[in-house]
Length: 365
Ligand SMILES: *Cc1c(COP(=O)(O)O)cnc(C)c1O
Image (cartoon, rainbow, N blue to C red; front, side, top):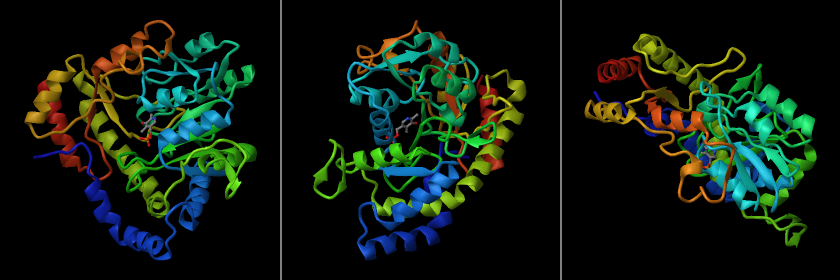
């Protein structure tokens, strides 16, 4: 048996009959950049995230960059975030000229350690940027309180967590802004690059719309220095169709994760665990094994493709280590990133494929 890590072709085959007419419509009407399909997706995605506004951009990285700028982050400021993330979170802070201050994570949920975050706050802190890693929301209640007590904006990196909830409410609606990626492999993926910032603050929404389109509301009249971060019409059409399927795909991911959890419970592996006040949307199913690399090799020999998200935390990456400030040596982050192995999980994976993976995981440890 062969088990791929994910299968975007299987997903496309299931919705081809809906995607193709939507995309052809955009092409025929020549609505190449922004336009009605993007606006309609923005309305639907804002409602989906329990927010008043969504501003569509050309990647998750652009979403983070613009959210930080809209919050007023710039040179000389500090932004508290985590090293346990994809580099884009930290890179977006550097784009603004601010210094990323990296704190450790909870060893079980892998989400920003709230006490460490409190310790890292200084008079220069201009934003707190937690990450909903692998699709599990960070501990948003205490983070919202902490940010409010200090008058610091909270910005969520929700790039891996479309539709995940904390105390019944969707991520992206807790901070002053939420940042999403629609990279093809994400839980909601474009046929190319894409991203969005969600907010319920009309002034922030207006700033974000200006910043993504050269800082102008009226063509060729520039109020602020902005960027070309606009979403393409084709991506808006694709995402509008796919958003209608997202809850179904998430339920399939959760069912698959449930089978993994049942079949591996007795194996002694560290498995993802979801606090009772949150839902996990399993962008990644990360199991923890001290002998991770050997197990990965054995699984590959059995035709099972796995991933590592991520092999090196950001504060140890050569490109970033000299430009970040780190609170301590982040033992929970370093240990988790040495042990995490991402098992195959995508909406179309079959129970037979999952059982095959579990059988080989049990044999390999
Ligand atoms: C994917 C991702 C991003 C960046 O999104 P792009 O669309 O690839 O630019 C940012 N943060 C996290 C946590 C991600 O997983």
